[in-house]
Structure formats: structure tokens, C-alpha cells
Length: 163
Image (cartoon, rainbow, N blue to C red; front, side, top):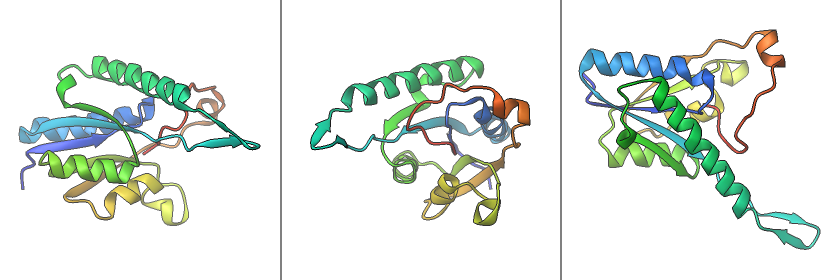
């Protein structure tokens, strides 16, 4: 079976590089179109006592940071089209499934940390994407970070999902 359109879900950290590389190799090997997606999860309404806090400015900053990181990722992997790079709000499982259905995706590629217990095979988001997916799903095993890498401070995007 030859894939025609591959969607790779990225968390916009350097950990996603092997996932993009694997998806790109598959796309090049089959002549498939390659699309990227990153989902920014909405911030829930927070309450400080009885006074609701408006998180819209923080949500916009989160989206802007994700947009910048997506641009850096596209620059790192020449040949990936901005037209095929999707950045959206929502729940990862739902957004990925909807994007796959609406765009004729026949393979979704996600990263898998493969930690322990039920997450031995897939991370929680990867597992969510697998269940109910409208097409094949490939989980790319991610290496566990070394002790030095774990100690290194990261500028994570708040609310972003690691796949």
C-alpha cells in the first residue's frame, strides 16, 4: 500500500525532529504529500476567588509562540510547505482526526515516548490519536532524554501537548 497524504503531529520541541524525519522519509519514498499539525490546547477559564481571570491574552501569546516555533521547524526542514502546516486550537485527538478526514490523510505519524505501564507503547496523546483514527497511525519511538538534557531548562509553550 502506498500512502498519498501523510500528516505528522508535532509538539514543536526538538524531540519532534525524528518524527518529522521519519514522516518525510516515508513521504519521499512513496511520493506522498506531507502535512504538519500542531494543536494548541485552549486554556480553561481560571478563577481567583470569585473573580474570573481573562486568559485571552495568555492564549494569544501561547498561539504566537507556537507560530514562531512552527516557522523555525519549517526552516529546519526545507521542502515542507507552509500551505501544509496547520496550527489550530482544540483537543489534539479531535483536531487531528478532523484534519485527517477533511484532507484525505491516509497516514498519521506521531511521536511515542514509550514510558511505562499502558504508556509503554504509546504516550497518552498518541494513544488518543490511535483510537478512532480514520486511517493508519505510525508511532515513532522517541529516545529518553539523558540526565543532562532533563536538567537543561526548556522554554516550553504552556498548554502545548507533547505527542
